[in-house]
Length: 167
Image (cartoon, rainbow, N blue to C red; front, side, top):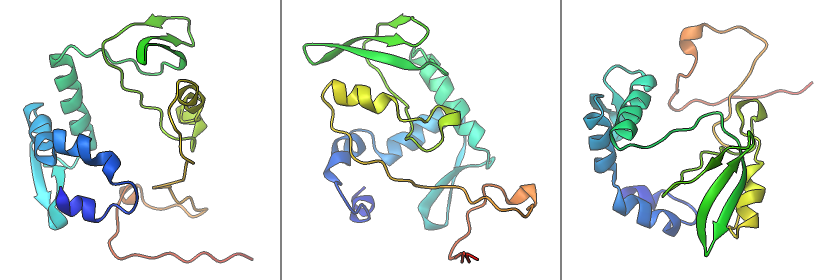
């Protein structure tokens, strides 16, 4: 974890509690306990033996079901109801009210509205007192006019560069 923090450029203190409470070793055990065998590659990067990210998703789903976690997908939060600094309930855009002990919001950023990542929930975060820093793009795809073989989709290339010419 210390090596990881050496590479965090800003606000590394924000991550201390989370990463020291549930470490990278804990994450590996969690995924493997969910049924996915893992391998370590160069640079100590960990991947499923199958090289299929869907196996990681299956492990998480299995562990969440094992722990009686309700998963709501394609559910837009319209309002977060707070009382005494605690989330009391959620109101979804379909009118449904959700009451739970703990909540995880997977909002994405504001980069790809067609996926639901439209940034609308950030105004709710601000309304209930959270600080929201300026959103910045990251890990963006490159789209070209040329057609590339589908087996190249999702490939990470080490020590690569790209040049863009305009006009």
